[in-house]
Image (tube, rainbow, N blue to C red; front, side, top):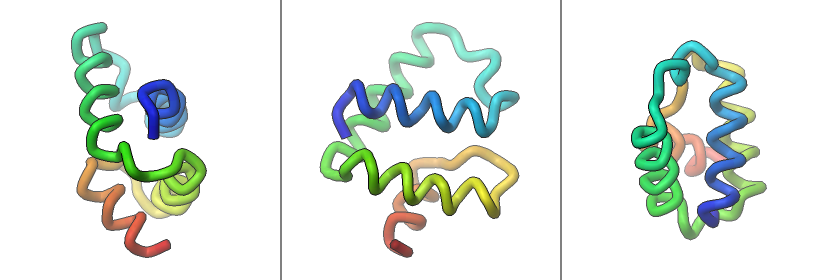
Length: 75
């Protein structure tokens, strides 16, 4: 994913898990986008969205990077 796609992806995550991200300041938001963009730079945005769609249906808490990689392996 690109940085722009990562921002869109994390916005979707935030909508699904609003409580987990309510207290993030701008520094944390930027750091989160940078980390996720770097870690998932080789994963196409539509594939990430498919993995997250599966993840959110069975998890009460937002995904970690490791959990998303696990979900991607299951696709």
